[in-house]
Length: 418
Image (cartoon, rainbow, N blue to C red; front, side):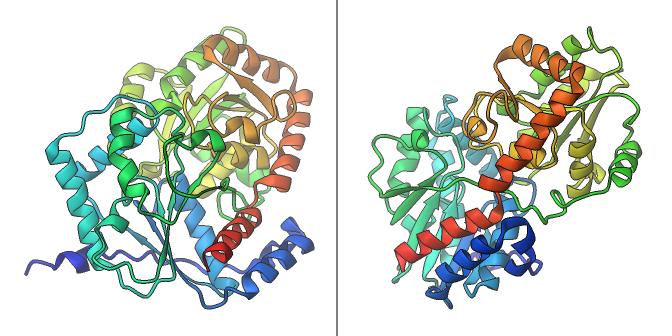
């Protein structure tokens, strides 16, 4: 029997429990007290977070920690995912790229497919939410397609570098976004000038107690890396990111090959999660396979191979230098994840990366293969300086980019919408 669209469209994400108290040692007494004070007037508020995938991306990682912590402080928070098929996600990935500046054409069939999935999801929603927070373009039309939004307040949260969007992409999306009560962006320069919605700025943050970020002893990190094929006796260059053209993994291969002229024993690991809403990733992966075929010192690793949070944690701790060669970046939370482990980085001057990585203190910012290569060589040749930068990076993340700060920011937003 065919399933009713509204039932098919409801995909609630089940989550582990988390307690705010567990973060006291890492975040401090003042942060915990402030969160409890902010939450005291919001107890019982019903909040729905909506995204396009429950795994394999930065938004999913944020919500997997944020929603349980909202629950722990008294918010009735839930998380659901808009279902989609290959055609839907192919279009929404093109729309994502369009918001980051890549030219896009939108056919009547594309529009119809996008609206059909959003309408199905809208019909599945119950009407008892106080606040609905919709993340990124995939479910953005949901608010416009509701027959009755009731008294709920709606927030659209953009995690993309939309500072110079393709006009076709933004003209398509803007009417949907302007039906919301608030729009949240990561940086002020990402806000399109013609957007007529009250805007708030909130930066992402890492969960220091998650499997990806919790403390690991050195012997376990080394053993985990060795199980993946890394020779822990030789230097390692690492990039962790989606296999996405904006992350320029092919450029990372070029950097590695140039650095090997000075450091012949250098290994490279490119690690990425294959997300259900990103059909472009496998094409990039196959292109990388072709580029490095026969190169025993280059490893391509994905969650499809069992390389998940623990393995990424270990690799970020074992790496001698990490890179994030992004050309456009909404935030690049992997930068804070890596700095949290005390590993120095070379990263692109893109989007939210310079906010996290202070050039010359936590690592280096760079543009182009030549500058990236020179910076990587410098860190490999001066390991004591690299360790100093790692210590400084850890401190910066503790002060600015922990999940407790993000929780405070969201509670302030909820208070404003109460």
